Amino acid sequence: MKQRQVVFAPEAAGDLRALYDWVADEASPVVALAYLERVEAFCQRLGMGSDRGHLRTDIRPDLRIIGFERRLTIAFRVDEDRVTVLRVVARGRNWEASI
Image (cartoon, rainbow, N blue to C red; front, side, top):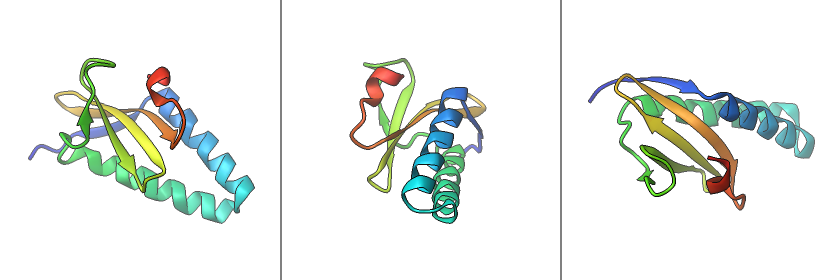
């Protein structure tokens, strides 16, 4: 199994900031930080065994999606040496339109 570097596209980084803000408002900054740490750790693990998730070439070439704790959809692309997290979208939102 090949280890790939995991990077976040600017849109995914923005998604994470917005997610932090929402959780911090609804719960607390401590809860938001812990949640985002879990999300980011999950994304980092995509670097090993990158062929996980569902391939969605009907939306975009090489697009894969995977769920996180039944609350988020993570869209990513696997290249030779890296995994790019494209979007992190909350459940119930139209993630397909944002790719």
